[in-house]
Image 1 (tube, rainbow, N blue to C red):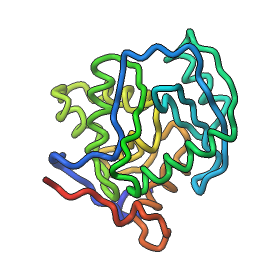
Image 2: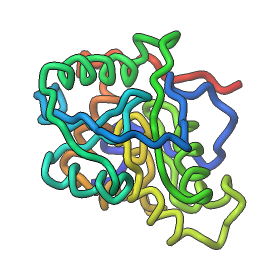
Image 3: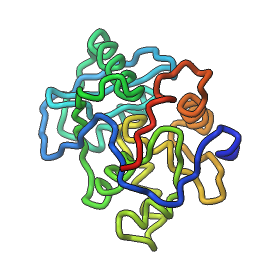
Image 4: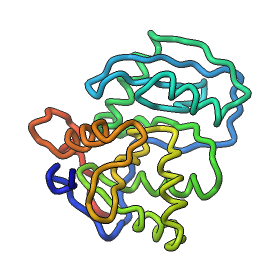
Length: 207
């Protein structure tokens, strides 16, 4: 599927924009990670968090726990489904732009390059998509498109660090770690005024 069929704008310049109400933090070393999988309007969502913030968000529990263990190999996991539901509600509100004053900490681990890429993804507004090449330009590595693709794919917090808004330069909406159907579903909800998703009308202005 191409981006224009979803009603998305394809950006060729990444301007300075107000970011989503999250912040990336690092150098945190928790002993225990809590997790839970709960239903949302996007489907089953797996969340992994610690006392300092959200560490991982995915849409398949087994795969999510396997992936997050590569970032936090020293941690124990404890399931807290009730708290996961509260976390999911907060995530969905932040994604929809309803809690712009409530900054959600994202505890991310990665290389300097990966964190630069993830921070750049926060500048892609709702209803817009960009190419991997544009992200590469904005992190100062215009020839490192493949490396950017790997960093985008390694994004630990799906949805809030919007790797789904990066598409191929030919406009094709595919190659999503959680499946092309999920990527198209998220982008459709962000671009479709009939989806009843508040994120549709919360696209940050260019500053």
